[in-house]
Image (cartoon, rainbow, N blue to C red; front, side, top):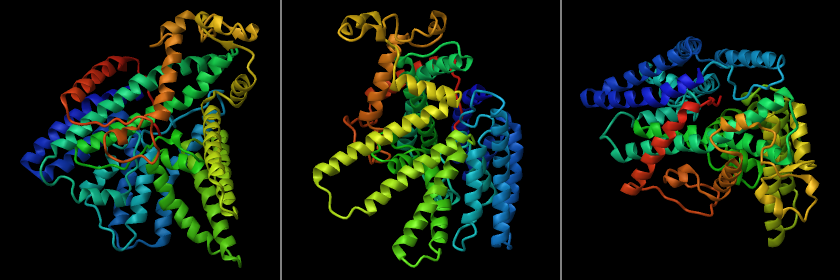
Amino acid sequence: MLAFSFSLYYFYLFPLSLVVFYTLRSINNKLALPFLALLSSAFLFLVDWESFLLLTALVLMNFIFIHSDNRSKLLQALLISLNLLPLMLFKTGTVALDNQSSFSVSFNVLLPFGLAFYTLQQISAIIDTNKPDMKKMSLWQYLFFSFCFITLPSGPILTYRQAITEYKQFNHGKIRYNEIALGISLIIFGLAKFCFIALPINQYTDLFTLSLEQKSFTLTFTESLYVMLGSLLKLYFSFSAYSDMAIGMGFCFGLKLPINFDSPLKASSPGSYMNSWHMSFMAFIRTYVFLPLFSLSKKIPIKSMQTRYTTAWTIAVFFSFFLTAVWHTPSNTMVIQGIIVAFILVSIELLKKTHVTEPRQSILRLSKVLSRLITLVCVFITGLFFFAPSFDVAIQLLKNIVTPEKVSVTPLLCPYVDEFHLSLFDCSNFFPSLTSVQQASTFLAPSWAILHMVFTVFIVFFMPNSMHIFNISRSVHSSLLEITWRRSLAFAFILALLFVFSVSMLGNVQGFVYG
């Protein structure tokens, strides 16, 4: 289903909808939005009819509530619970299935298509429309908001309040060719990012994961390190690519979607990391979970105002990160990860609050470096436990990295390691655990895969992100190199080449839908 939805989504549905949308705009503006709503609904029906029926039921129920006179707090709470119920049931079902197999289910692939995303959007509608100053959407607007094929597979999460603001200018005025050119360029850039970076890494990590699941061998230090880095980076670039393409499609239709990704691995603290990854989801958590819970917790009967506020902040942070972990996956390891990250974040912030004297500049610089190192170590280790087939396998991989028994290199590097203990090195190949048949099925040979990983790491830490390159938003994290997109023949030629080669690689796609 995933490969089918990927092909349908990017190569049939989007071009068709774009052509018909602007054709209808030239005839009658009022026809364009209903067309997009109906086409989005048809797309969801073709990809996952069960999800279509579920979302249709939720939309009708919520739309009636939004336009009713009785919008009491009790009814609102009941409706929020009913919207969360399918997600909770499917999450529980995923856990039950996961417990029967050694391979952990990642990316919520057993959930109905888009359920994790449209559930949050529906909840935002229930909460936002209960405010007296909030405008109500028409039926066609609400259908497009709920079924929007642009954001349905992987976000970003567009809340009701944000959608109302966008719809005020949507479908009006002249066609903005600059935004269309920007949007198409961003779509191609995201597609190339997925095909040239995420896909090759994904093929090798899948081979290693399959072998680990079958317990056929023990990985070397080089292979274990590749699995740890690759498991997180394939998600990093896949999710970043999907966000780029969604935001690019939004520009093509005149919609400005929320920024969803801002180089999180450049973050210098756990809090900065979380606020830079899946930004629309974290904004949802901050608005609809953290702030209400913080306001409620401030009523705890503690005499000291500072202690009361600190306690309220701590409770709100822990609960927010717990929900964040549960939303991504219901596995015990992921929930534990969320609690660990919350504990680290709270500890760092509390240490800042209790720092009496002004720190010296040298100590401050050192603390930033240490904070960044601790953040990276925590991110990659928790990512390893998230992607590993089982907890035991994750421990074994971590042991292979911390106390290596074998470091695999190519024969070309053997002369340079003679001065070390040669018995520590395996000079046959970078990936000696994989057979030649398995290696032949990948895009890159092992030596090229290592160079590809080095290049990928360089991009992560020293290159600007897509939103920065395309002048959509300025990143809060600095970059070593500066690249700026502009409308020119040279950039058009480069993007055309990227598109052609990306399409040629899509026959091997085994993609996922985030959420």
